[in-house]
Length: 88
Image (cartoon, rainbow, N blue to C red; front, side, top):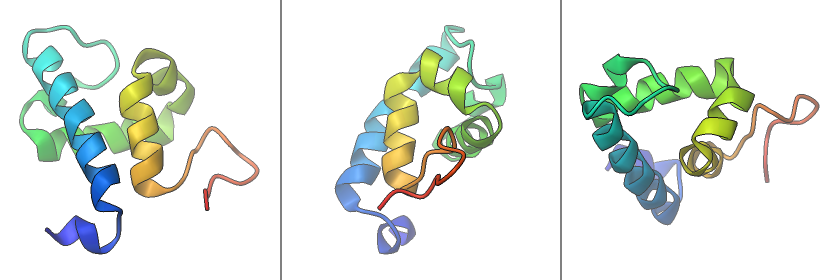
C-alpha cells in the first residue's frame, strides 16, 4: 500500500491493530476522545485521529495511550514535545 513507502510496515500494522480496537469501541458508543465520525471507516478514523493528535495531544494520550503512541511511531513525531516534535 501507498503508506508503506513513507512508514515502517510494522508501525502501520501496530497502528491498524489499535485503530480497529478503537473503531469497534466507537461503533458501540464507548468513545470519549474522537469525534463519532471516526466510526465511519478506518480512513475516517485515521483522519479524525490526526486532528485530535495535533489539536489535543495531551488529552488524546491520556485517554487513548496505545492509539496515540502508535501514531507517534507511524508519523515519527510527538506534538506534546513542543521544542522538538520530530522523532528520529
